[in-house]
Length: 368
Image 1 (cartoon, rainbow, N blue to C red):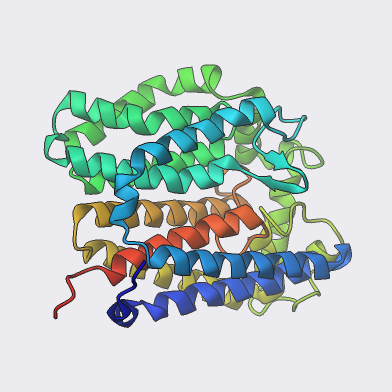
Image 2: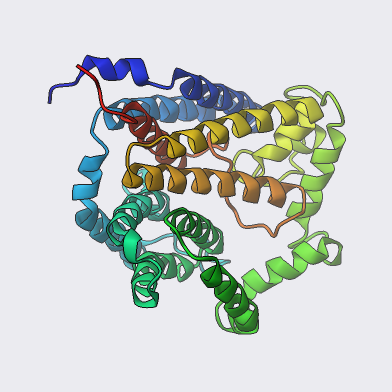
């Protein structure tokens, strides 16, 4: 494959630097969060995941993103096959009845992580083909069924958090593709009317309990409310400047659960304080702002839909994780992009970044 060297001039190095800064913060905080567990192994794994992700970015950047459009049917089939395989080979928490992981020897991964990115590619192509007829109810129904099938498979695992992220980027992509406001109003009304059905017919007992605990975590402070309460304590304890790395009480004394994954933001707040939180959030906002601009400047609708999907996916991940750790959302178990510990999650986000950079590099034709 011959690579046009002029593409190098169009790489958004600013976006790369911002994401790498977030990754560095993540490595440092993961090291602190796992200090009592022997942080060397966790740091090494996180750094290796980042390096593999960087390689994935480079590979993806130099494959014309329209190649993915031509492969959308095999990608769609592969994503749904992986999600179906979870019900046969999946492993997970017996206490929650969830099967979300597939293990091959010592290697384990969550198919839903890769499915998010795969479905963004497929939906972008599907919308590109149907965009002129999106005002027709039957066409919109086809789009929703196309995107809804993998989302139902994820919800059945069960994985409510990832299903919500799916819903967020699907809505964002369809909206950008030209969804009429009347359909948004109709969807809102249907959502309100069907809420009782979803509560009793879709949500599992433990998911309903999480919502109730979110509303009043003090009713079970040593049980299901423990995560939220300890996270809020850690966030508040950081105050302005934080207690310093490796000095967080909730972190180092083991009061904070899942501190290197789901509740990593609480460690940032406790040990780096309000200032550290502001720096991290500003980096995220810069990253998302750059992604939005890249979507606006894409040379075609397919590229714009791709970047829109990635932007909504990352934004909702960030929002859901931070809201969860400060008690503004139920505990959903969704990690923080580029910061939380996790190999497949890091790789998926890096691949998503590669697609964004890919679209940006080809935002206009190269003049000879």
